[in-house]
Length: 142
Image 1 (cartoon, one colour):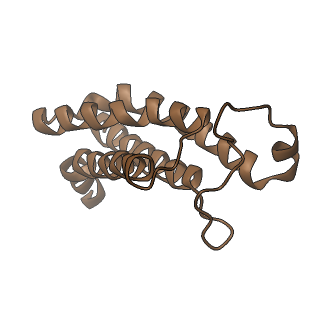
Image 2 (spheres, rainbow, N blue to C red):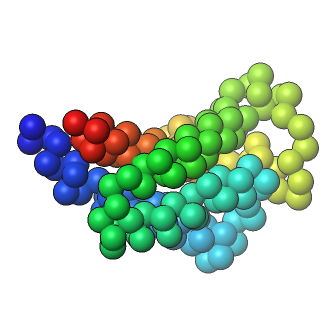
Image 3 (cartoon, rainbow, N blue to C red):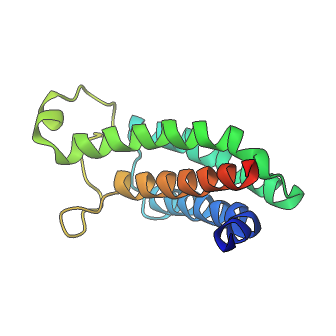
């Protein structure tokens, strides 16, 4: 049961760190580099930013049941990120995407190695947070 002890001791801090890095990264991209967020980016932010506060409070209070609130936010945010990534990388979705406002949802500000984009980074953060919280839920229930 070494994994259970590790998860119980570190899942909140690791989840908080991931959410904080993702939030600071999105703010850096929009406020420093002046990348204009599209509507889907804003939706992803709506689901990521509260995670920082929830996980900070849960870490401070050692509230291992925060997964009840975090998992739905991470799941919905992850689905939005996946859809946004598919608009950028899958021709069918790219061609059939509706107008997204002033900033195009299909435009890649970052495109490393033809794979890594801003929505993929957000999706990775949501998945990491979701996996950590899911493991925390399993550890708490055992």
